[in-house]
Length: 452
Ligand code: B12
Image 1 (cartoon, rainbow, N blue to C red):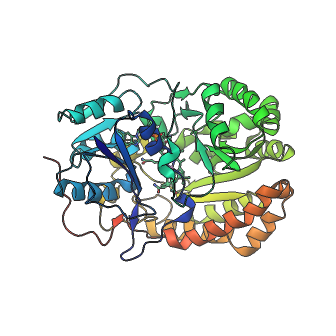
Image 2 (image 1 turned 60 degrees about the vertical axis):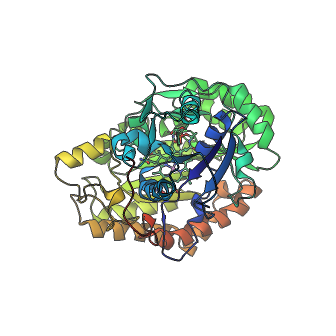
């Protein structure tokens, strides 16, 4: 049997093959599926973000990862295969959030994690009896996972090694798709499995990115893992909630395990917004200033992310936030508009309040990346979009890049300092490239072909 795995892009401007470079990292969902596939099955992998899919190449089953931003493109790809009578199975975050929508464009839908379900899907496909939905009652244990990275060979990814230490987060932030899909639970891989995986890739990868939604969701287990990491001497970055930055033992373990930086969701400087998001833990124990001074003392770089469009935001909310990010010398930062992902409590609330501007923004032909899909309270949608753009342009202006580049923490490691300029320049270039980026390939013709 032959299986074709596909990681779709969010879309493409007509006739333009370039894609948002900062997103071009090795996709772990495909490597995870490849690793779960029995050796007698031939696996082919296409990354739609950087290569052309050869739709006419013979295959028996197509497996597509679907996120909300990539859903339209995934359905276009599925339509191409449906024309060729090849069955398509879809899984991933959007398939878990909107299984009924995804089922319109897939012969089979995997809802949730694939670890226990994928072998069954393959077996059913082999016998020509795919079921419409595959679900598990419980979250699978992550022991024994072996992502197969051989599928990435020959593709031009950013030189970062992506590794999972765990999945999910126990917090219940209103806007978060992760808490919705995993019901605010977190599972972790055994440290020995992770160390073996890192040992296999560390010669080719100077920086490891633990893609965990919140690597400190279980702080005691995180500390045990960081202790196990110390002998490996690898530079690493990850995502963490800010509460951990008040724990001295945690901070010391970050330094000893060679952590180079953490992505922290600050979201907003306005406590009322944080309360509406269900994220008041951000203000606990001295709040941002104290947490940032602790991280600075230990020379941990910060990737700060902010979201605008909550009810307390006005056109005046942006400049102080950018100033805050610059003053604290953030290595990089994101200034996103609030995005109502289907299935989340935020989506349900905005829908109940009659504030969604599209039936399904991710499929609407009028929608493009950065458009605001809901009616904010404190400004018009277009004002919100423009203000986010201005915030990014200011943070990634050359004076800001040079200023932050001289920050003692950003300079503390030669490798990270050199890359500071490259990474900031990439983000700077992406600000305009991403704006109004189409969802779906603009050149794709015809109506989507639904499954049965
Ligand atoms: C690392 C990461 C990134 C990286 C790199 C991604 C890459 N490799 O190219 C970067 C930083 C570039 C990134 C960018 C973005 N990301 Co991101 N990212 C993640 C993160 C943290 C981990 C992804 C990962 O590798 N997980 C490990 C794999 C193994 O787990 P998994 O994806 O859940 O896959 C499992 C199941 O879902 C299922 N599965 C998945 N696909 C398939 C397919 C089939 C056929 C089957 C059967 C099963 C299956 O099986 C897998 C094993 O159980 C996730 C959060 C998360 N927990 O997944 C967010 C996440 C996927 N990202 C998200 C978003 C919104 C974005 C951006 C739009 C952000 C932005 N505004 O800029 C961009 C879009 C990029 C794009 N699509 O091109 C959202 C998507 C939400 C949604 N509703 O779709 C997530 C869920 C984060 C969140 N908090 O909401 N991201």
